[in-house]
Length: 495
Image (cartoon, rainbow, N blue to C red):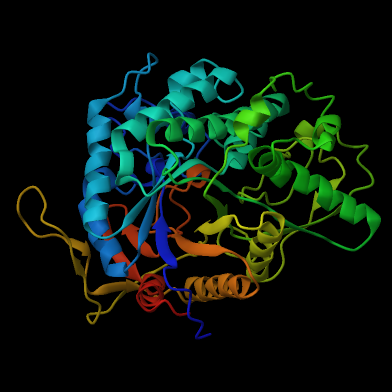
């Protein structure tokens, strides 16, 4: 402990539009694939949706006051595409732009740099009605959307992040159907992978066409840290196969302009990859200023010799995926001989293991592979089953004035969540970042996931990742010990 981070190191928090905004029927917003998915029976664990979420659409002034109290230097937020282009003709919605301008301006006025994710999974439903990410046109439409945001927001945005975790959007959305739009088709999943890659490249190009080379561009990937169960040739081969479809399918095109040939041969019976057109890889490989790394846990795999009982990849069993959902079939193709072992040690409420060393390892591996590329830990956190306690010594944070000129509390006083396991997880993983920096990794920031408890996708409101608790009935924010601990770290720059 007592490690001092480099001067200028960024401490931030992160959220996503569908998980926190609510107000899905306001501001001329139209449905996203998540609105449609949530309306279907038996898709969300608790039958909920993002209709209200944390009501940040209305409460952002109070949440920004909370961020200022935390002492963070940056806020990673996402834009809801259906608020910006609510209709199939692509017309830009002035009310949506105005809302985000107000948010961006208030962040900057409070000394908080906006890190804006253009796509955090809330695809307009009308684009899914035309085929969604397996269709090439969606990538082209994304470039138009990116250009409109760059033109409207300009230098209000500190860093432009094209995509958040395309792994989840492609594999969970189209491979196993556990996420919106709920499709189970490996061919569509691989087409989605490619068109998300293409959207990234075209998006970076569109932003820089509007703003020039000064635009700071990035992408955020949930790279899987996979370990082989043994040093045997077979287990090492299983790890390589898992890495190819978890990591290389994004890193290769985005940073090296290529797909590994094994990806193509391993999936020959699933697809012929005819969706890859001449010039696509050149378009995908655009210079970026920073690579965002989302990290939560690790996987251990071994070779499965007997795959004869498995009818196809579509029904291949798998343990916990990198996104943490227990599924009855593998969202990823060509994994017949890859067995993911059950996680060990004390597990979080998501059923994930705790392995801070994995974060150090992936940061160092990326630095060795891409020397000079700036890295940021853009998500890291843990879910636990929290309980609220009374404590009259806990102060609230007085938020900005609201519309009726009555002062409001960003965090209510007198109540707190004691969450020692989340505090321990936070400390251990921030220390893992420190160790990576000491060993030479070029890491310039850390973003705690998440600022607030929120809508946790297919798990609804049953899992809480926030360093600040949200009472969903009253929308009150309540301090957690982890939030107070993070405030200390952000203010002192010391772990």
